[in-house]
Image 1: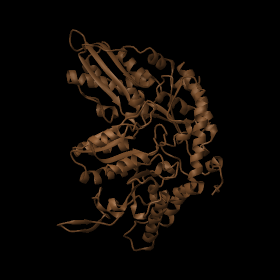
Image 2: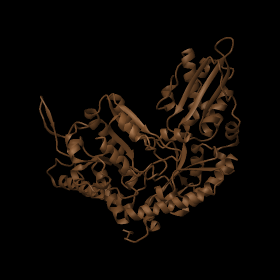
Image 3: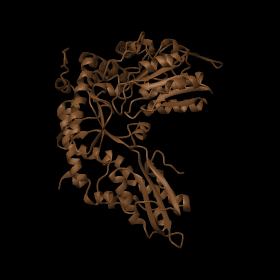
Image 4: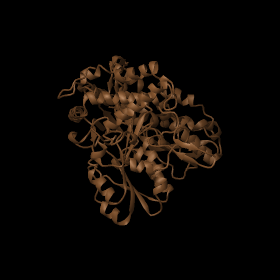
Length: 144
Length: 414
């Protein structure tokens, strides 16, 4: 297998080219915008809860960025559907990184975790769940 | 030294002075096209610094022992070299700082806090690095002054057409602009803007971080008032930069950083400031880094700034031609004869981060991102670009390696 393809294995390119959950939820129950000031990646996350007001029914995202950030956020939307806000607020980033499945340098790690961090910020704003530790190393994150 | 005065730069010979190229990256030859981000260092600079540590190191300006004298002579000798390099009238106009950013902050604070107020204006261009944009935006807001940005036109050149209007409606106190754009490589003709600034009674602050490594910078010919340079982009170590300023202005300014060394006398009632340049060099200086900058200046002078500039125009022309052959490429910036060795581009709609990471696998190092120029990126309508940049050790094969690498990137994203 050539090194290029190892790095951007099919699943990442598949999610990048056909992102799941891409779009906007007009009447979202929770939302947040995240930015990675190092590279200008941007992600907006929208969450709709189910009837119990706790279980995540749907997550959508919009934004622009590199394949890693967009694919990771796409994977995330599938991963968290059906879980509660509390569960997702404490979701171990390793679970997402395992799904991404390629070694990431510290710089790219920030790309990979942008969506998850932004999602946790959205849940924090809507439900008061804990913020991720150190906001995953972000220098700044728009909490507006 | 492998360099002799000749009409054309011998980049291959110079390259042998740079130990970094003696390795392979991911099994491939290193194609280092990220010199605008930071340059590599020649053996001459590395050795000069090592020798200084091994034979002459002590703190400067206060030790009476022989090592203190040697170290002081080393630091002040470097100041003299930099003064000659920039054609400053006097060595005391050379302030050693960490980098161009610190030099620009020094002017923004030390000059701005005492000279800017409500009703005044600070003018920058849309092509500025954040190191110009942010400190002057901040100091303007903080002082209640207006912050005015000269926009770029559809050719990504600074549009001067609003200058008359600005002059009519604003009391301009500071104009700050770069000499060479770090993002697009554009070599600016700042002369009209400098004249305009002085007609307004404003000072002109020049960001020469991207210019000084690549072409002759003459502070007297430019007729600017302050000029900032980063050592690390011009073969010197990181952690050393220069702010040049007119002595008459520097003398009237309050210090920026306060503490040891920058004083004349300290009493409970009152502290008085030291003479130039010491007033602006609080604390122990980056002594060996400054010495390394002096060695770098020697190196560049022997190589010849005019030859370096010509070499980079040639590489820029070659790169623009070769990159234009790559399907899906968008090139930014002016024609080769008006640009330093910088080429920014995008490949299809592939994010530059992905392009750069895949190129790294091919041994090609480029910068991907907004290049600390978010206002410019907004103007271009892109979040980021790829940037390949060249220096005196860059050879055409490295550009070929980039072009081949881009074909491989396209295959992955096909």
